[in-house]
Length: 250
Image (cartoon, rainbow, N blue to C red; front, side):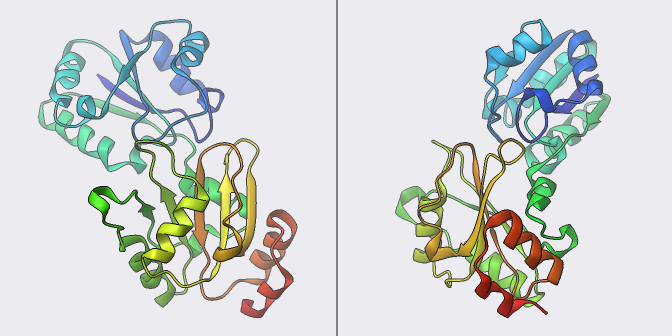
């Protein structure tokens, strides 16, 4: 059997009892740090589980995934995944390929950045499509995240922007620069760091968030055109939002 188990949004201590027990008893345990990077190193995970854990790279999960799937035909294999495993399309594809090859797959869910960002007080049902701010590979800055923000504005929805992790985790100041170069308007946003841990957060206009650079992985939320009164109050209390933001409360 192939077991794809989420480790949670922050570190190995977020792992559920179900995931922990599966990893303790499996024939072999793998972990991947490609789709996200937890605040736990490989040795921390091994110490917590009390066993050897093997690190996977991108090719192991994608073009060479058949090797692990075949192994799961005769053994119980656990793949530990930062966050919730089914948020990343990589793991959905892996699950599908395993099913095609006749291998049973079990998914153990966990917390994800997609829902954890609601620590800001923003309402989950008001989020639209998510996008990633990527590094300018081949010197080209992608306009896709800006296009997604504009699409979400049309339905008055918030936009969660994930930041590229490779070759190194992108920081908020870099992301904002890329967004402006891609044609982003200066609008209210929430900058986040170390979600699930210290939960650093700051709400202001994008142009005023360039100096926000706390520890941990970063992400951004571009706010919808309007705010619910409770969202406004939460942003004031938890994210030091400027009082002027009340102008967009309806």
